[in-house]
Length: 93
Image (cartoon, rainbow, N blue to C red):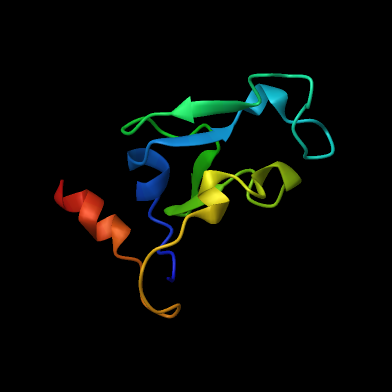
């Protein structure tokens, strides 16, 4: 799916995210910290979300600690070139 970069998923999904306090200078997570992943409940803004010119941007998307997270693995059903339907769904709630 083509992400519309509305930020809805980063606000409305219950998901485990990388703890900002556990991200090392090289972009990985501190393996000694048991709290390297934290729970982000539905309705709270992900600590990595920021908006630039009205578009949602993940501050850690490019870091190695993002790889393998629930956000990285999130997929929607549909063709790869279809526009995201999640944002519209969340706006109707």
